[in-house]
Length: 386
Image (cartoon, rainbow, N blue to C red; front, side):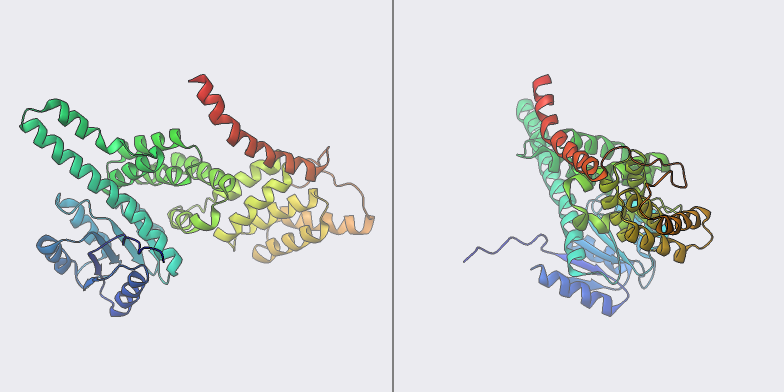
């Protein structure tokens, strides 16, 4: 018989004007073995409850009886005694302005209703990252200040460094970055996320943390750069299913519809890594199933892999979503001509991508093998260099 696991939180507070939403959240908490949740309907009532009795987690709806959820979180962050409590913000809309505002407020999680139990648990885990580091940091600082006051300067220095003394540096540094985001200390968050990546270059959450920080700072260019790096690490570590909701929440804040998996897939397509690009296009589809450009790129990759049946299916889907695309129409015509011509070798596709010169499947396999080998060999090279 296995021992019961320690609950992530012991005193959650649900802040929602909807009794139905509160019941769903309470049921999900119980399934995660988190009991004793309190429910209030207004921001004022929530602040009064927190100042009186506290909470270690807040589940907040975007709509409250007296204010919106963002205004409540802003009031929470303005109170130093309450600013460190992790908040999961939930909404039924998910408009770009709402997502961007939530990122800037430093919420631990942002999810769209209705959400699944798996999604809920992932957001709980993210909130626990924030809570664990905030508690450890608070305790270490309290001990250090007490040591300083007593004249024990050496002991104070050790206590100030205590938070860094954890077995796994990357998760600890990631938690430090999330704690800094929660109080809108973006510079500190950026430094912590970079340190986490120095310890583990495939730590996808740290790339996403950098994307969140730069988005909150208003830099679209930097945000997209780190989203692409997050997508690359996610594909290499094969963690897309686990992290899909985090990508979706951040993509909702990009009004131009930038999809990092599509961007990376197109880079591989241009470099003639066709088999590898297909897996990225598949991830891009899951994030944006109505994006015609994804199906067009997928059709090109299948065409180069000599799979005309799949190429036709993909380009037909692209045209169904956007029948004004000259490039998609030209590709569909080329595929139809090829059907009439038999098995003639494919030439250049619309968009300027040339046909492969070597066996395509082999090139894709070698590319993926190269990624895996690089992930294994690079730490050894770095260790030798050190």
